[in-house]
Amino acid sequence: MQIKLLATVTIPSEIINLTRSKPPEKLLLALLASTPDGKYTRACWALGISKAGYRKLRQRLIKKEFLTDVNGHAHIHIPGYAFKHSPVGGSFVPILSVPKKGEKVSTQLPISTPSTGHQPLMIPSELLSCKHLSASAKLLLAVYAADPGAPNNQVQEVIGISRSGLKKLKGSLLAKRVLIETEQGYTVRLPGFVHMQGHFVTELQALNSGHKVSSPTPKLTPARMIASKLKKSLSIMRRKRDTTPNCLLCSVSRAIQEVENQSPEGPDRDAVLAKLRRLEDFYFVWNHIFENVPRIHEQDFMKMFATATPKQLATIREKAEAKKLAGIPPTKLLGCFGDGKQVDAEIAIVAAA
Image (cartoon, rainbow, N blue to C red; front, top):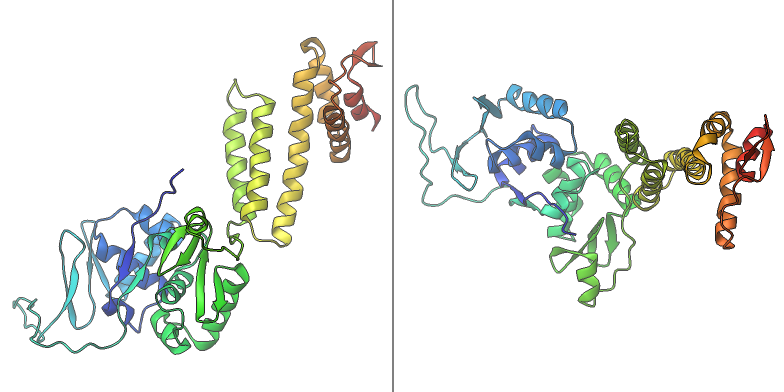
């Protein structure tokens, strides 16, 4: 399955050299320069922010006079430059002289324009599309993707952070394994992608080309985010009449796999996994009742099931799965309770509280 990616964006040197802007501001200015009337969803994805956060960031740029908004169309203002729009995004041209009131701004380049500051910084689509990385992290990783041996002072100036801030950011990215130290400096590793020969390729493409993928894929997705997404999904599924307990069980099992494969290790991950596994036991037993108890007795079992403790549910599941592994089919109508109705032996454990 092809992974959906955002288009590559290049941050012009005029934006890189801004001294009064932070990394999210630089990245948003670059995105608006490439698509002045583009949808906010692209910027939200690239910056990892909400719609409200996008509006707040845009207002901050307007307050700093880097941006004006005319009927939803972004006009970028960089001191000493005029932005020239074009179908492919536009470019900055130097202003030859300070225009007087009523005069038009010259957009002609001088015969010789000295190169000052840093070069444009390209953020590849694979990096720009990577969720759960901050704008500062994406700029830093883009610098090392272009120049593995970039000195610290250069990285500081491009990103616009202090020496201590750079040290903290690099330490965080090294811990997440998206930044990897090499003999040449640093290389970048993204979920599903490997950086080789100056560009990103999928893990499969790297293996097929004979490249040894030594570093494991980074785990960046917060476990709580996966759990929150599951909660919304289950809420929708429960409202549908044709949803079976097995559908709910499969959704929880998939979420557990996502957390195990995509979430970084730590207390948050452990807490979410423990909660999801209890939920998985709950839906497993519910599905076990649904599939093995006659409909005439189902409501009686559901009353016992509703009062079961997590430990009891785990015990029922353990016994049922042990039978399945042994090749023994679920045994129906073995025990007795109440007014003599026969019940499944595993479910009867619930009543032993």
